[in-house]
Image 1 (cartoon, one colour):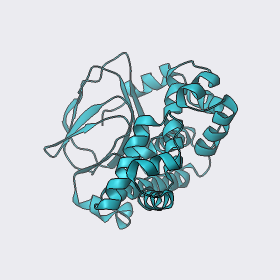
Image 2: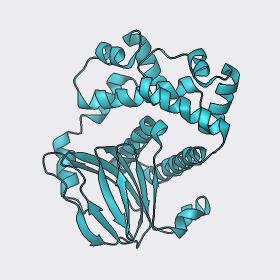
Image 3: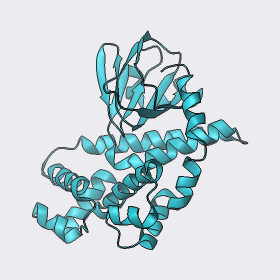
Length: 274
């Protein structure tokens, strides 16, 4: 692994960059805002939660798509060791992933890798490499699930889209099953086959993903965030957040905001563009 970087563009607008190549592969996660890259002539527009892989040596051009701020994590590595697990990456200049259901997990894992890399504690390199391998495997699992076709896939996508729209509501398996005209057992089995989790677990992960945004971007207290996301009380919200994110909401806010944004912004904006 060559580097793990965090780029945050707030007051200073990112204007992109001209053609360049880099001597490393890159797996980039957009945790806020939007931007675009043109890689070997193909344009990829990235929104919050998207991931873009770019192969070493592939010519890339960065393009701004809005005037709004954006931020992104980027993991860089050299060599072809990971291609043994993901051989298709060796044959393309770039590949885009849209793992919406993994947003909370991705944000937490990229943030943890970045902190490990910056602190450089004992064995930080194998720890980061292990996290990257697991992260890439889960992203590819999600990508494979999205490729399924047929009646079962349509039912699963219908439920997924419904959850993404109404995740703040008190959804139930019976309600989701009624929506599709299928039985609860069929729905749970089909959804888990495609996404590795049940529909209600997907709903909670979506809520916790939104909770992480609110914790970092607002000063809302836990009661307000719980109510915003459809949880009946703050204590239940705390339990669900810790179960999904491995840390309490207040701990997450404390861990991610202390490294002051001024430090991160300065480091990000003065870094070499990707």
